[in-house]
Amino acid sequence: MQIERVETYPLLYRLPQAYGDANGYKRYRTSYLIRLITRSGIDGWGEIIDWLPTLHRGFQERIIPFLLGKLATDRLTITDVISKWHQRSAAGVSIALTEIVAKRAGLSVCELWGGKFHRQIPVYASFQSYREQGDWAESSIRFVTEQIRAGHKRVKVKIGGRSIAEDQAHIDRLMQSLPPDVLVALDANQSYDLAHARLWERIFWRYTNWMWLEEPMPLERTQEYVKLRAALSVPLAGGENLVSCAQFLPLYQAGALDIAQPDLQHTHGIDSYRTHLQMARQFGYRISPHSFDGGLSRLYTLFAQACLPAWSKMDADPIEPVEWDVMENPFSQLFPLQPVNGAVTIPEGAGIGIEPDWELIHAMRWDGSVYA
Ligand code: MG
Image (cartoon, rainbow, N blue to C red):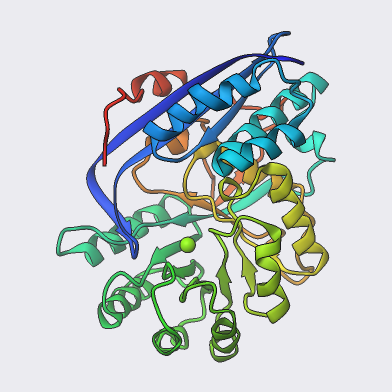
């Protein structure tokens, strides 16, 4: 089980047309795949999303020399050391090591974790609503409609990047264009203060098909969240950038959120991510994971969700939905998996049960040039 080789695959795709949220526009998408191979020939894949020039250098000069010769079964100590250097790399390595152990045991990742509660996991189509062109609202509504026709039943769209009036006009038109059984979440990326966030109740009361309002205000304003949660008729969700379970705890204790949204890539690794999920479940909180960037970490997010007991006997869905990036991004299909009617069937088979798309990996290799 000694790690003998580490392969790295830095991948870059420049978007022909930028899209974005309240934080700005995305002009490229990247993926950094790593493949750890043991002396006995068992391999495990990991994924990290970060700026490739520094990430690649960090792997070549520090993380790969550290990994070589280590035992793949020492996942917790290996992840612990790397997370002190670079948290995202630790999360990526943690999944690669998990796959190796599962394959060695002849088990799927879910079996290794004790088996699935759910064979299928609902997903929601996640959109970046803004474009640089003047008719952004028009193209947003058209794009959402296309994805609904393709089978999605839940969507998340962005607000907070334009004036409240412009954003509300967009959302109002969108809601009128959607079938009433399509569920909708709005994500403001922490753009508002309490007074502005409350103005969204004017839109919420007109429709019934809401999932949640996501991060309307900076997340450290815990008491403002408590007040907003009491004032709104829709659930409040957040926490995609929080690293540890301990950072969620004050939000839980204050009653600031209805739904926690941890992101595997922003934690110290798959083990600490799963610990958080289990803790939230023990205390009866809903978890709808954030997973916008990266197909492989999304797959592990689905595995973790599959191994989580149902939140409530009353909910129509057996388990909370996972985010599904539907924007132009070739890397969301590096490990090919597609939802059918808004749900993904968990792959079976040893390890992750899916082979990567080698053609795509070779076609998208980053050439080492600096990009912005
Ligand atoms: Mg968000």
